[in-house]
Length: 450
Image 1: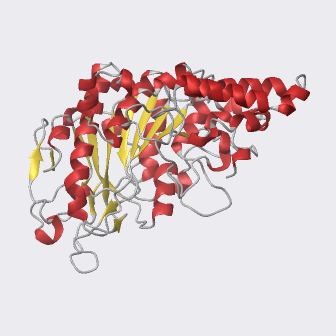
Image 2 (image 1 turned 90 degrees about the vertical axis):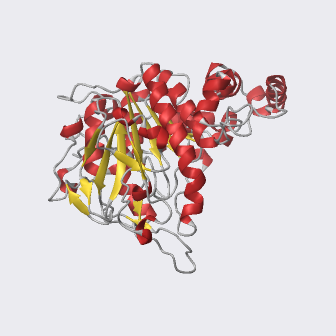
Image 3 (image 1 turned 120 degrees about the vertical axis):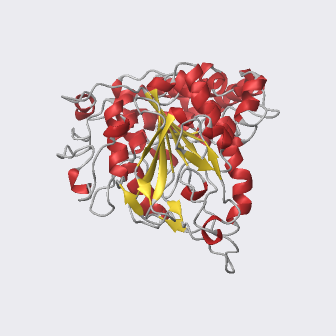
């Protein structure tokens, strides 16, 4: 997607300073939102909303379910490798992998789904079905649930927050179009950068030696070189350019920019989340939902561990354990957990049987047959387990759960009717979640934890 296709409210990190040249195009596009947008935002018969926001912890590459939320300590070395013990949680009967001791003490706040399945082992297709609930194919590319939330609860739904309504920390998820047929207006704002940096706002915009004063001087220089605006000050697009420029600089120097500045947080809080990119992204996510942002995705990559899996787990699992446990506790302490859904998932799991042979040297491969997901807050019960895998974690043994079941449940708690109309540019009769994509053995939405 080219820069000229993106209005301000879905800019990526480097667009902030380009927006003065492109803003008029973006605002003109935004002004052509069809009438169905307003009508679709208020679904007739929609369920009562219990959640106001979602924090999606997206483990790009596929996290290992048997090393995390569905341990199999009796399966043997070929399945467990060196991670062959479990951690008892604060909920009797629920065990986690040995490297998640802090999450074990928060188990009363979340439910584990141990029977996720879709049978797809390719990144792109698995990511698409996990985030849209739709089987690929056909003429339409459906939006991810984050984009749909942006449609219902973003600018079309009256959102007036300081920052865009759909944010990804820190890099775009890639390999699929999050907005689908809804179009680029509903793509996420990807912050870029590293929230663990000493002064993070947006990558390359305010960091290091680029002070607020220097940014202001650059702005004045840009104005002095803007011959087109000087020659055509009364052009109809001039006011739109001014508005878009003001929004862009607010993301850099104004109150919006301050929202991304973690240097204002207590040092002990930052340490409790973990001084690493994922830990500080979790802290940033709490700040964003506290500010009213309806959907935040933390794109937490690095889980595609075909080689030397256990070496990677030795440092990634402690980071995840610390940050996610603190996020749940912090949301609870701030009175936000009851209104904020936390959804932990990757596009699939990883093979329970370890690939010890060369060239993998102890790797785990893609595995969509059976994997895990975690749901907390926003109306989801804590301290529960849904479904079960077999003794080795290779097959669903009880209560298969499909992506459409998870997404439909999240929709309902957000107040979106899963059977209600799906907004689309051509006004076609589409549903938010189609029963055509519901597998025959699906039980449906997760009533046991709602």
